[in-house]
Image (cartoon, rainbow, N blue to C red; front, side):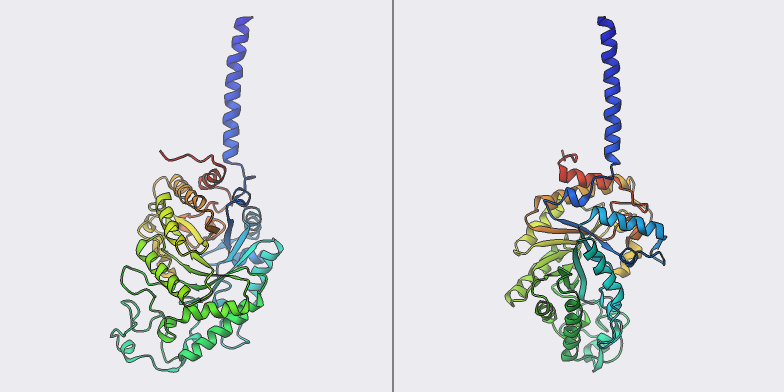
Amino acid sequence: MKTAFAGFSVLSTLLTGTLLSAAASAQSADTSATLRDAYKDYFKIGAAINRTIATGTAVRADNVDRTKEQVDMDIALVQKQFSQISPENDLKWQLIHPTAGPDGYNWEPADAYVDFGVRNNMYIVGHTLVWHGQTPNWVFQGTALPPAAEVTGQPGRRAGRRGRRRGRRGFTGPRATREELLERMRDHIHAVVGRYKGKIQAWDVVNEALADGGGEEVLRNSLWLQIVGPDFIAKAFEYAHDVDPDAILRYNDYGLENPAKRRKLITLIKQLQEQGAPVHAIGTQAHLNVSSASFEGMDQALTEMEMLGLPIHVTELDVNSARRGQRNTRADIADNAAATQGGLVNEADQRLADAYEGVFRAFVKHKDHVRVVTFWGANDAVSWRANGRPLLFDGRDQPKPAFDAIIGVATGTEPRPN
């Protein structure tokens, strides 16, 4: 009897171990866990969505190829996992206001995006009102000749090392005057923000106005800077606040993990605060890579940004796993092709999970200041850096190990550092 009981105990132990192992595996693949629920007590968690998700239509293009069935899966993923959305492109000037004048707007795609958010009771972000990129040439065209120094290529007083001739690729010819450009900016902001007042809760008012590199110049040598002057940023915030006083207005930029870029951000925001500009939040894009993303780096960046006294929104989070994308965290569209080539780094899934686990531990540590965390895309297949596999879900909308790592941070079950 004793021997039989001992045998039963061994069998019971083996069976229990097998069941626990199976349960652990099931938990790892458990798609019932959701980001929005795991982080509801920390911050809003969201994703940028493209036009196919907003409209529910199939697409076949250079950068996205999704069938109707795949799009339906993408929609279901966004609805289940996220509480907040940003538009990838459809509120940028080039798409929503491609031609001059009050009749030059294309509202339909942006309307579909906002309607998607309203139907799903989501926190809706508008991206972006003023940017040097994806702005049509008509915005800057006029009758004024550029300064002679910029025509000849000699550095003018505000000219930086980059873009001295034209300040913006693809633009030639006479420019608008300061007054003309400010009027166009005001009319555009009033029209777009006014249309979605009460629906869009937060706006990226000015995007990527800081200069790259470690030089003394704080602002990028854009046509906004050349034509209007440095106060174009404050003006944009004033115009947006005039239309919707209840909206959260963000300044948004990339590379703020870099101390030199972060110092420029701090300088700019302090200047805007001294001017009384209604800047309500800092948007840090956080386009990271698996080689440099870490708890320590993000912790330091957030600690310094908190000194500005503003809420922090992580606006465009992804972590590049491509071999050629490990050198920097620049987010210029022109650099993207090179940053996603060369195949994936070794042990890409594990390194991605480790990177996300670290940065989310930093977000949770700073939960009193971090209010929103937005992934730049719903899954790898629709990511602007698809070849770098930078997100939590693969092209079949299945969770990757990084998803489990992030859920573990929220629930306190992630592996702790030594």
